[in-house]
Length: 430
Ligand code: S3P
Image 1: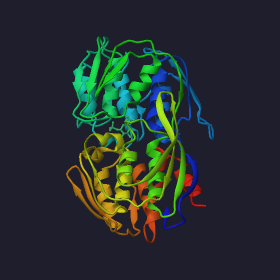
Image 2: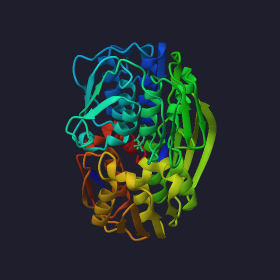
Image 3: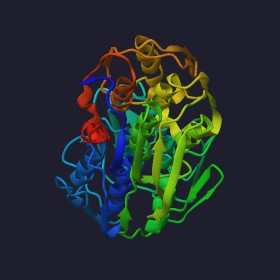
Image 4: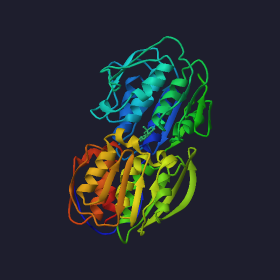
């Protein structure tokens, strides 16, 4: 796809449902008794992978249909899943892989789980290690700590543990907490910084006994979970592209409706404000225990900042977009403590440094982040998305603000999290 300077971004937009919350609604709904109705479910390929895995384990799930984002999950309780007929395929979805593996360790049947080439190169030892400490039988088939994984039944409860996670990762935390549903006592996880807490909030609303204190979450085993109505807020990670686009492209003003602003996810907003952005929050409300609002974002003259420490997990998926934004801010932006970006759908640290350099940015990669000297115009370039949806969308926006043409190769990978991204972007350029 080709992008070049166009009109300012103007207008109103409702972005699709949150990916993390959509996944969890399917998984927890499957483990609950009764029907879970999920509205504004994200019809991205990742969440559809979660649906197909749970269907393969005997769960009836109605929807979603084209243009209708409601699904109904007819859960069968904590012990109601059945052995799938074949290997479970998570596609590109790390959240499905890691959270579902936590659930599978507690089942009385054996499974094999795999995914695409990206998934097969991502680190799974980060869940294999703690789940094995719980006496789960989970192994990497190639023996390199990556998928495919085999998970075998152990015919007795898992052993409860307290785990000090070396990484602030909601996927790791949630995997252990879900295994904790099948343990012999309370299971707890501490993280260096609090990562997104959607699992904790949603499990509690389904009836789990789960508590959080600082960056430690604790769950009790064997609860009765009950089907719920879940209203999924818009995904701030998807809103990020329009927020950054409006801030970078002179004359822009966009109103983005119903964006989830859970404090464990709103790091990008805080960073943009520190850079001098004009972002107003309107209509602040709660949906299914998650804070939401509308955002009014106007073109702003930005300055550099330092991004490090506990804010990093609260904006982990937005860092590629923020790196582009930093190129349009006067002065220096330093991003530290972001090593995790190396093990996402692609190595996002390398990809940002390489591709922004191609566009003429003054950027250097560091061991755990990057340093960007902004305020110099970017020019178009040919960018390979590396089949990473967040790279494709970040560079589409960069292309709209750069001089000349930017070509995004393998741009269709946005279907992972935002199938209508290009249409929605187009609607703001009329
Ligand atoms: C997610 C957690 C984050 C994030 C991913 C979704 C989740 O990953 O990058 O896109 O839904 O729990 P980590 O937990 O590995 O940081």
